[in-house]
Length: 251
Ligand code: ADE
Image (cartoon, rainbow, N blue to C red):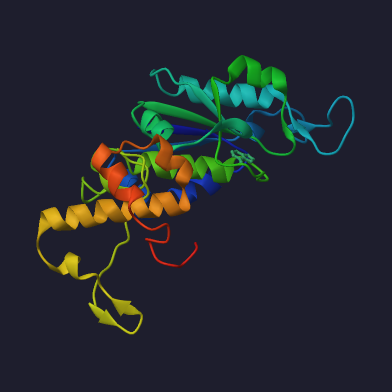
């Protein structure tokens, strides 16, 4: 997959994509990240990319032309067609289902806004979709773009060392939260690993994990449970569990 970033700070996002799973995916040639700085396309001595908003008010608005030229340069750098995704708090909330859809594309062009926003005419002419990473306001789209890059990179074939591990993540397949995980030592002053995980009985372990996911999702994200893919038996089992079935910690 090829990702083009339109940003005043493209190195920031590229650096975020330099570590761990994403860094490895790039080293393995599964992902390439290219930055395009609108300032390089800005005219005048000051290479201006923003100006005051018409109608007054605080802050600055990113101007059309430097952004449009940067987007055009990014498009022209590869023959594969690409949609332009604008990271903004007004966008569709990002979910794992959207991440899966993005990860399957050959190319992404991610547009990062700064200041109070981007001239609406540029958005209308060039942007195909808007995505938000949550109901809070960042000072720019770069962190949001880094989130998208990370989430799609780890879904590229060959990015994770264990191909099955993405399928077990929270939100994958069944829309439930992930179960708890443990590693050595078995005995620790903070507690003992649940016995079933030491049993070697894979069917029992799978059932325990699934039930933990159900309890956890009901306690922490009841909104997800309503839409989750549960069998009638699982719904009945869950209904029979006390509400504090996951333990007493409220996180
Ligand atoms: N830019 C500023 N805030 C944002 C958010 N919450 N999501 C995506 N892009 C943003």
